[in-house]
Image (cartoon, rainbow, N blue to C red):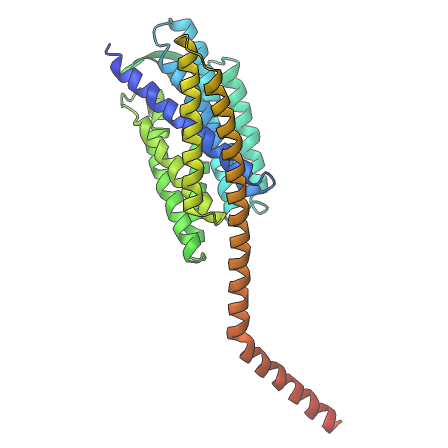
Length: 326
């Protein structure tokens, strides 16, 4: 077995983990009360949890059958919730969460039952693990895995139907957002959902790395939904990258026996200053959004003022004529 493929897949899974976790957390922290941001973060965190467990799974392919059975049951659990969290997010994004509340609640309940079957090691859900494609061990579905896959796919189908039916009713900006979400979901399913095919003894190589396109496309769409500036987004991403690089420098320096107190002081200073700048930038962005909305309302009122005055004048004349006849 050539383990170079496995190492590459583990690295891809780690990239997906960092991208989905940090971006989901970033959006959540912008407005913790916003249901759109909360559902988006829940979706991203589900992908992040599955990605980190998947990376661990790929790096433990030589630990034996029994251990891989346990690991396989564990890593499948978060993947079970990906389609329902995606559906939940899109209902909030389209403003239809109340309409589909019962369907969403049913999904969480039924997928929780499947997740418990997986976590408790039920052979009805995962029958065994065996070598397939480039993997020494991969799970094979049991009897209850088949109805699970039907439901899992059904929620993604409903996801696509909601987006496509809402596309015609949406304005220009919303249509652009929907296109990005559709594009990201297609790539995401190509990379992540293809792993389910291996459960049916079809030896493919799932392109896990393209799952990161889902995170990028969704991230752009959610930022556009909040009307955040793309420049502001670039500043925030750059700040996070600087934090990560400084943290890595501290860890590597401490392992090499270097003096790291100065590096820690710099890191803490950068975190404080970066957080202040981000919060200030977000506040200014929101103020600009409010000003833009007010300007749009004023433009609308100016354009329609003459029509409203004419309508009111006409109504007054009618009332006057009625009163005169009386």
